[in-house]
Length: 179
Image 1: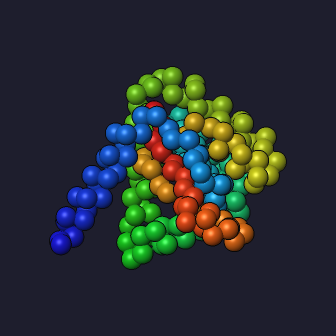
Image 2: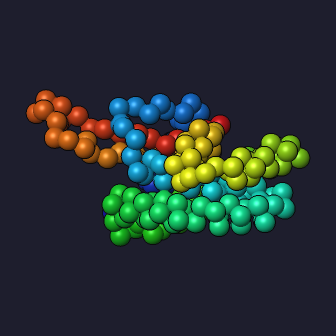
């Protein structure tokens, strides 16, 4: 099959995820995973970047990045690993596409909100500045309604060997577009 067929199939799956994700899926049977946390933090980082660019708050964004640089770098490594494991040779392209789509859907929401966007979002900078730790940032990112461009399976295997009957079950969490 041709490469364009696979690209069309991937685009179709992404579109289906966007269309069917009007209602965010619950965490499902998966426990918390490093990839799940990384998607949350990346979504928050992107939301703050879009806000900074749209509302002239680059200094506040730079302060955020400086304060949480180690956490942000770690989560970027987790995402890189996730995309490599999930997509193999096309990992970098898929990762880049995700980052681009993330910024695009968040920018589109800003455009739809008009002048209210900055009023609604600038307070996030004050909220993240009072966070004390990387764990606080993760919890904050998870609690916020951060828009994601598509669903990504973000699961880990159970930590302990499960009984034979339980081993056949798959643990999965999907990060979905929220509207």
